[in-house]
Image (cartoon, rainbow, N blue to C red; front, side):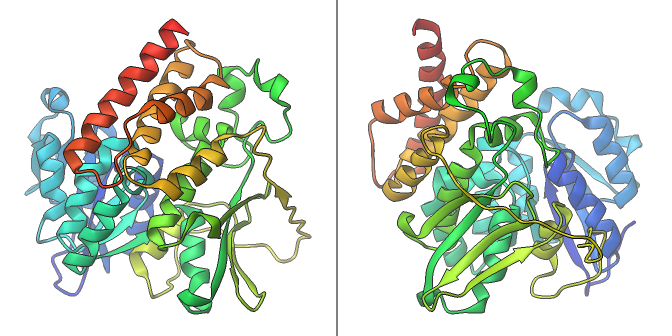
Length: 391
């Protein structure tokens, strides 16, 4: 696939070999030639990157890690495809004049610089990297406002809110309600979670995701980060952002208005739908997404979230309320703690407990610079490792 038609839209997929990026490639292939995967990037799955570039006819490919560049040979890519490498190349791809839409799908803080670059360049930012707003929400949203760009969320929950919130005016929103599957430990007691294994934490009942995101679902830290993300996406105070457990993952989130009306977005759990909507908004086009089978009976359950068993939720509300440096500290501490758990160095329950400790100990600044956020990111990772060693 390739296209040079001026009426078509070029897309850059940052993190194209991850679960979101792979789904985005599939979606764009179904929307071709209106949409084309002009640029792709990957960190380590370079064989898959080569396959994607040839399938999509991409014009630029970035190997985010320079150390992996030697594994790639230019001749394996489509004719006319430019091969670059390193963090600066990611930023250049995000800012490229040829690109109209940037799918920000790099997991964690590694995706912040390129996400911010797309925001500053006035692109449509199809945002799957929630950490960008968690870490630097004030900087990213200010960049979008200044450049005239826009953010269309890819997270299924925030996409649902984005769709439902248009049923009224922003001033009429009483609350937004993020739904959570509850993860693999939805019915576990705190005592049971003390003995949780890596295998049990990775056994998500609904979604197929990467290891880090799956662990975040088990701790419900993913929902804490989504609370913070919603605060920046929809300019809402923390007390207007609620969480409810919905095991079926059919209702992806809801918006309640002042008159008592609750508007929800429903669909089978399939990330291709919010990805496609972020590309085509405000249009709705036929695509590869699964649809509801209304010949079957459906039961939708909703349960209040238990913050004693899942204390990460309280951290999300706290960070959404405080802002400043707290998001960068929480995100970095969590990324490092999840990795320690996956290495078998801490218990499952230690992930959130460690994050709370690091958050409490950091030097809070309500108006940090990007340099300060990056320093705190490094400090938080070092502190959580030190804490895990001496505790």
